[in-house]
Length: 451
Length: 117
Image (cartoon, each protein chain N blue to C red):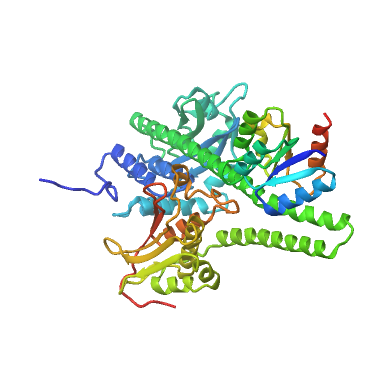
């Protein structure tokens, strides 16, 4: 017998043990496309909501260089507010998404809210005599404080803001890094903190620490990737711009410094004009790429877009030196996408096919039903095919095999296809056998074609 | 008259360098790619080669390697749009590295400097 379950229970039941509820809340949130702040908020929620551990309040500090800085503070301000919040949170059937929403709105509230006060707090980690809460981070010890007023190791300013005699500091760390501290208390109910609650809070601390560590690493990696892409773009643009600029400057200098000669003047001006057009073309392509319209996909007729593309005068002139064939199956369903962008994408593919194929060669465009519900558009050239290096860089920005290529054409095709739920693939089985690009479109649900 | 070989795939730039350097009294031949440059180098004795780096087909770094195998004594100037190739140690084999600019002064100065050595 086989039984299947949803991966995680969508809401948590009252009778579930605390540990399970806690893990359930945290694990579910990590499946959501939440921001780091939201996920940290989830951890604070797990610490404070009734079905989780059920502390009254949770205050999060994160390290910032040599400092422990308050960032989020979740919990009610008063017994009255606590009643309201806990009423909301104990509504039967309420899920973690609702709880996150609720907590988010709680945090957004201005006017001396807890989180606003938290953001004013900061403690040096390298103070001569470190006091709590910094001490907990430095020693990496979960610290349970009672009768805080008589405890010299508690920062008096912190105690005043906290306003309770009993609290727990949970340090957040991963590997060698101290990442922060969470302080939990029962400021409203004044319920004593049990050993079990401390254990669970420590577990939350471990998860939060590793989560912060992982998301910092992730951010660092993204930054590196962005820097690398920026570097590639700079190198590429340098080449694209420096050559025309050198020619324009050089031929202008000739005009300025040499005695005027009508035919030479005319020739130089023509070269200058041509190089300026080239610069404009670079600008046009860049702007076009950046402004690519990726609106909500609409159903459109692929055959109509194709014939529009093929009728462009410059393309017709160009195709005269090739054997260009077009075969679109009858009765293809409308596909989803932005017709104008798809037209541009196909145009890019055709330009590539012309560039890759020696004059007189064959270029085939074919539209047919895909396996399943979609539609495939194929553009096949009979050029030299792709080397493995070109193949692995095909959709990388600023990668081009053409001397004057910007390296954005195929990336544009990819973006357009992905924006409408489709994808693009390239096939080049052996050197010399040409290249085949397949654009896979989703077909539109039966209905009328707009525009 | 000193003979220069200019390897440059951009037609407009090849023309510019040819005219400007001829005006300075050099005999200038230009080649649009590395293959053509190597053929010319086998046939004629040049006093100096100016080459771009990024070209279709064999690039300038490969060309330099080949030239060194062919004729060790010929001075080479790299003239390119990229600053970054300066860090490629293969380009250290060249006698000078000039970043393309709308003023040809630096290129002319380097050519002069190397040829009077």
